[in-house]
Length: 281
Image (cartoon, rainbow, N blue to C red; front, side, top):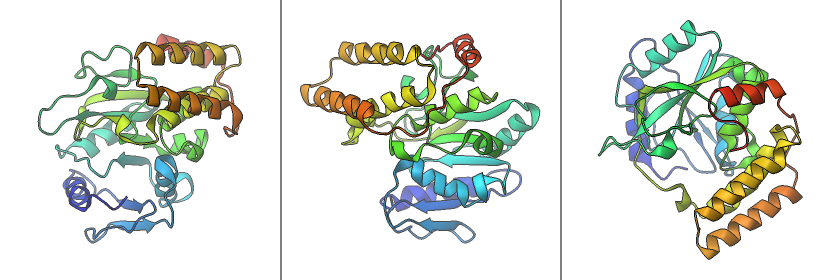
């Protein structure tokens, strides 16, 4: 968004310090001018904010159709930083050694405390962030994706704008036969912040949750999945204003187009269940 030039420069410097072959880098200005960047870093400036998935899709296309000019796409938030110099090499090794691996989710740690929040561990059993495992989704601001996944499963859902776009791609990738790993040894430093700081958080979380189900789940699971999430939302006792925004978004999710519907196979439902997160929660 062009409002964190110092953090962006620190991130780009940490990418440049990675071991092995240089990492080709593109910075997308999502409706904002791109600050000064180091020589060799390409930039794309968009006339309007396309949202998180829309901006990342533009970055993908900067590496050719569906990113196919390269083998691996690395997505990093502009206020993050790679504290270790071996992260890119670990990514290359992981994809080379496991042909089924499609996506890697990094561990996000606070730069001051080293703590990884539970919500940054993409599985239900999140008490031990140092434990690497197969998972069913990934973190949008710190991940690596094999470009074949984008080619086969499609890009991020641009219409989502913010929230749940990673799970939409993850479910489609799993349905196409790919696997997803959470790797605790691949670290992105990122300040601990609450997602609810965004004004659109509650509305878009609810709207996109409905879109996610409508687009991807077999019909019998749609009401189960959304019923469970409605119950969890009520149990968490959000404020009156937040709950009003949430129900407004929930209604919007049912009354507005959600994009193409491609329900996952039942064998993918079983795969998600075996991986520890059946698609009802």
